[in-house]
Length: 329
Image (cartoon, rainbow, N blue to C red; front, side, top):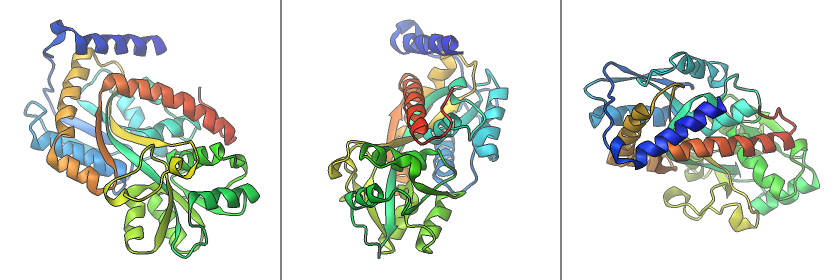
């Protein structure tokens, strides 16, 4: 499998650089099915449907329609299994997300994202650590000090399970700061919405979640953000929120959200979807959707997405081992 992916990477690189590949001939000739491996309402679903709407509105699918389907179950594995069953079918799209990498590494998701073809990363997601507004913890430094003194003292909410991206986003900076992360008291919830509700109700002390579920509660005066796991200071609703690095902890954790294809697709098909998704990434309505959610719109094509997938797999495997969770294959 590794050799096949490497060969495909080289082929796609040649496609992007060579004049002989300047125009791709392949186009969808029937309905495009977009499989979304989570329930409606979260950011993965929000962005997938935003991409689907832009593909339709901009008429980027050769007169065909895009049908989005939430295929929920087994931590996202059901959607991945359906995508894998469509090997070679470039009219079948799936969601590409950092959470799937973390879930597969730790064994939560019984599927391997490395079997698929990540064609584009479209959103850079910011993970935040927050507390109730009345918490004595004011900064990331306060949190580090409390957990160094007693790693078990504070209950930390993550979703949807141990070893997923919201867990990794708080574990990585705490590990760098010298906290015994294998001793933390972690409370997994089915969704980040439930995590935030538990925090507001006093059932947990800390929440790690992406910006869209935390920012509304901050605006309402109910939560306080201690740190952002972004590599750089934020803008818009995240302006003024200090990153871990700004607070002396040399760590960041960024989640990405995008689109992938089944195994077995060819270079022309990759090129078609890269071009289409690049146009989506420049659409004003798409940009407004992502920016309103508190995250950052980006575009990175197949080569960069594949490189990220392999690098993130290795880094997540190392972090999972430090947490005492199942390391990746």
